Length: 374
Image (cartoon, rainbow, N blue to C red; front, side):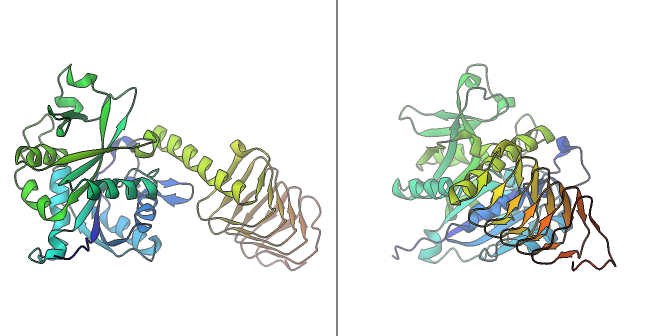
């Protein structure tokens, strides 16, 4: 038998997200310039994933188009649609229809599959890699990523047998008062032996408070069939937080923004007040860039070495040349040459070009059709 164990993934992103109260499909709500679902796919792309299947539902066409345009190129992605929302267990069953029916081979029989929700944008690749490693080292049929949290209301609880192995997961709505005292919760992120997933899903029942097929019930099915079910506790519980409304979206964005800012500062960028500095995940900064408070850098913005940006600057899809100074300025699809000084109180319209070494002076406005190459 081959020792090679292929790894695939299923991302559940079919939910309507009614608590977002938005016409925008939930997976496409943006954090730090990138749709929420893409942050999940970015994390998966750093693992040796052979193939990822994304289950779409509400706004399926819009979600599919966005992901196809912006997904990490190294990740092979297929899409399947869950036409009727019947729970996460049903969504996983729909996902498996995208995989070839080739389970006779040893390689596939030994393969593993990560199943995770599309609304966990803070999940780090290292945590997913550690989950897979634990799953393989312990030779489990399924390994659940769990978290220890102080206020577990709303989360499914992890229940264990006498041997301290995970025996089942009970959703909050179905839990007894005693079960609700358990602080270890389900993150809805699993690593399973792929050959066992489909048979386990066929044994699910919608006999619960919501009348849905819960993917979490697969744990009890596997445990009762004699398979080993393990767990891996996330070191940082905030990574596993789901985003279900605008308040949670803002909290996740703040955490992600902190990570982005810290990464750039460790790279060699000076931020005088990181709490008032907003940098999209898609922005590129160079060594010795200084960013002053109140600065927002969005989209495909690039800031070259030694440039100073801010205070109170918002640039979207702009290029700032080496050693340039930009303050109290709003720019969109504009280019600022090396050594240029822009502002204060400048407005750069799409297509604006400020030549090398130029000083615009205060209250400069560059409009479409103007001679912008000063």
